[in-house]
Length: 94
Image (cartoon, rainbow, N blue to C red):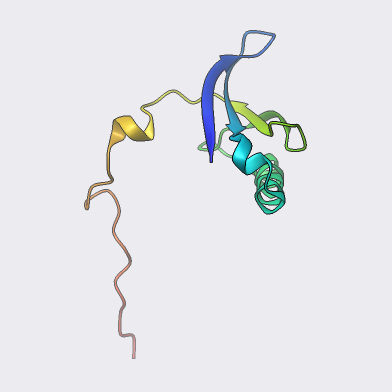
């Protein structure tokens, strides 16, 4: 749905720039969801959240730039292991 680039801002700050693929940018419903994603990301904060630096969900090619967080890509990490996360088990509390 999008591609993420590692880039630098005009001031030299490392950022991650998410750019929506054109086929999705032309979809009004997807664009609306991306606009909500940008709004939600701007509201989120915390030690484990990349801050939004800038965004333009209404551009011909919608994009969002966030602070760069170094680490492996999802492709480099590979599939999630069964020990990294597991669903909650139902309990009977009666």
